[in-house]
Image (tube, rainbow, N blue to C red; front, top):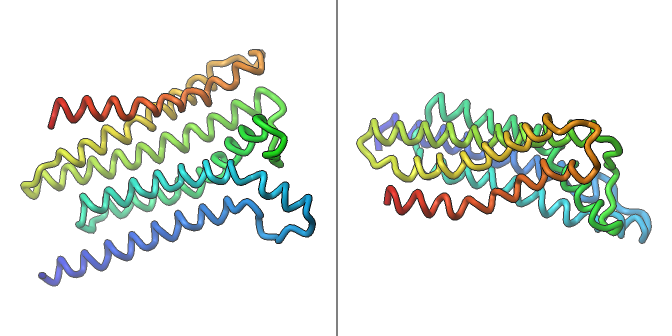
Length: 224
C-alpha cells in the first residue's frame, strides 16, 4: 500500500467515525426520557408512551446513516467532494431530528392518548410549517446521498470500474428526495381553510416509499 493510499484510508476512517458519532448524537437528542429520570409511576408511563415515536425516528435516522455506510463501501477514496457532502449530511441530520420527532410524536399522540406528546399542533399553519420543515429536511438528506453516490459513480468510471452499483443507489435515494419535495408542495398548496383531515395528506405521501421495491426491481431488470 502506497503512502497516499494509507493516508487516504486514515482520513476516510476519521470522517466515518465523525459521521457515526454525529448520527449517534441525533439519537441521544431523541431519547424518550429526556435528561431526567422519571420521579413517579405516572411520569414513567408518560415517558414509555413515547416509545413508538422514538422507534419510528430511530428507523429513519438509521436509514440515512446506513445510506452513508453503503456509500463508503463504494467509495473508499478520501477527497474533498466526499468529505464536504458527508459533513453536509451530518449538518442536515442535526436539523432533521427536531421536525422528525415532532411529526411522529404528534402522529402517535393522535392515534392514542397512551402515546402522549408535549407537541400538539392546533392550527393549520402549525401543520404546514411542520410538514414543510420535515419534507425539506427529508428531501435534502436524500438529495445529499444522491450526490454522494453520483460522485462515487464518477470516480468508478474514472478508475475503470463498473459504476452500476453507485447508479442504482442514486436511483434508490432519488425516491425519498422526490417524495419529500412532493409533501412540501402539497403542504404549500393546501389552503389554511382546508378541513383538518386534509392536513394528513402531506404525511400520507410518504407511504409512496412502498414503491421503492418495484422501482428498484425494474431498474435491475433494465440494467442488470
